[in-house]
Image (cartoon, rainbow, N blue to C red; front, side):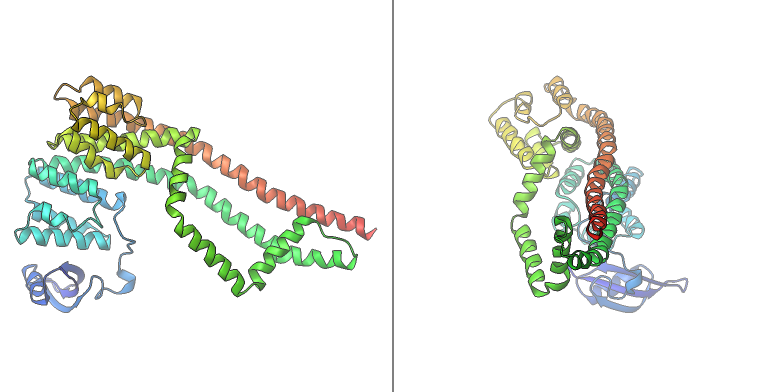
Length: 402
């Protein structure tokens, strides 16, 4: 259904702006009337009636930090026996992300019009990740939607904390890279053009490092269309091989000593969280593994999950199938095997998730504590080498002069 943005006057006389989803303008006006709003402007297209400086910035999809307050609020409201449509209306007012606000409004409208949650969520895959959609559907069908929302909130909080720690750790390297780029710019565009004429006057060959920097300067400033063509060709080549590059980068990271330990625990945590939610919602182990697969971006992980699912479908036990997942954390394997034949698999996966959450955060902090000095050493070594080479060239001028 199309989205409409509006400006309206409330019953208190205040001006408000927002967006809603309706089949046509008539239905949009009726929806505003039900809210007690008197529209002054109504346009098709979310954000059209909202000034650009008041619009939310959205890049498609929703991040864990945007989704987290939604599911925290939904879990609390549903546990208080508030109907889902009213809970969504409350959450819609609180959400600041534009795409997420429109999606929640559309979801509420669909439910009020008699659609099931499954039908409405089928059209929201660009905002809600598939794994969350599956969990919500299973939560509704098993009448545990409130508890499901709370478990999703726990999962999203863990993901948001990891992302926040990574961003915080990368602040210093980014500043260091920016300052290094500034220093290199001064060397290439100011100091090198000043030194080269001195060597030419003395009929002496400049050091290779100065010649290299001068060639780079000429390519950037005097190449014109040729330089642009080269840059465009490189970008196109990177785009064409992006899948191979991503696969290669994943392979390197998963096999590196520090990042490999973190990614293994992180992926194991995600797997256990998703599988635990699915099983608590009443899904079988086979369906739970299949539903947890989209949460794992690494190709070999998915291949191993497919092998485990195939073995389960062939009649094997979960313990035997888990052996197919070589990348799964040993502690998670042990816990799953211990309760394979009992009805405690869901709670045990929750316990395993909590334990792995602590281990994952510890591993992440250890990795980040090593990453910053490593990047500092690498960047410092490169910039230092260029500066020392330039200083050496300046000292060589004294030998030429005398």
